[in-house]
Image (tube, rainbow, N blue to C red):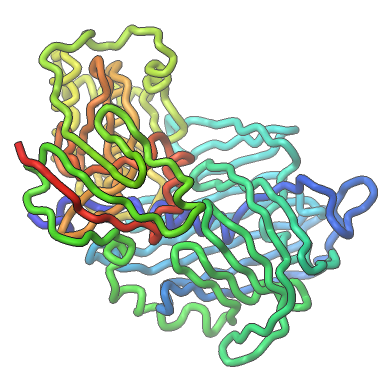
Length: 497
């Protein structure tokens, strides 16, 4: 069976994380800034009427989407809405995504509440949030959904205020601004430092503009912005090869067919110097890892019993499943490092009655963790239709829709395993297919020791071409973004069973 029918990619969720940071990011001021009042408040922007801004989105010169943002005064607040449309070829199949973020902010652009929705095909993801004091309370919509409380060090400001900030505050050459950023699609928080680089000419649709260039880094990758004299963004470029340019209502939605012609998953894949035959039969694998720059080299590739990385050499060996497990389900140990992988999470609703009842009906009276893992993995593999989607996965939503890519498979399996008392977690990284390594998600389950499982490929343990770069939920998965487009592999050695 071909790769396109068996396994799909996690790159889509990384794309959404990128756009959430670039287009709908929330930020907090953490230093005194030029033009701020003596009380530390932002200068109040004067937006007295309805404003709309259009942008076009390109990937390596090919148009793949567009965005539109709206700012509307209402009573003592502003309503800010941003919509993003992306059209991509995902694994040979057309993939569309539509995100909408709507926020209510005060006249200083401090956030009061927001709604965020994401639609990809038949899959929909909705969350809402509100600020109460120093806490951001986020709630997924739908029956059985969990709420999450996130501590805020300072009052959050919606990213649409950035243009107003630059418009109303004098921007000096070489000035630096630091912002902690929160991404509503992945719940990730990170710091970004914005540096004013100076003035230069930038051309948009054949028209030259005298612009201010600002640089930052997101997940270790450079991102550049050009802002006109009014503080409006003319152009953004950098991460993952995407570029955003200012546009018009007539122009922005046009000519997006280019995004359908090139397989985005293949373009993001990691090339290798020679083919690797029969990867499923491998017992061990040895690779040389080449990383693009010094900052990417500083990122740590995890090492554990299965996978060791040192001095640019990665060695992976296939685990041997234990014949006898140290416990019968449910796991009753008290090791904190293990027990935390039994708890439900924001999108892993392992305490939901539907998830629990489904898991119990699948395993019957089986009590051996290894056999329970096999049964649950097999069920997910056979009952979830393999379809590329670009949406934040939820175990309960996947159980209802029965469709999804590798992240949906892994998220549902994690919830089912935890529901019957087996500690489990999601691993993300790369897997080999058709002479390349593709970004992928799979599982690990604790059966007295950690073992790998891949419900998309129906492997337990997973073959040695599964290279783990991170583990955990969405806020941890997004940490692998710096590797995309920055890593190369050289095949050194391999052995078969």
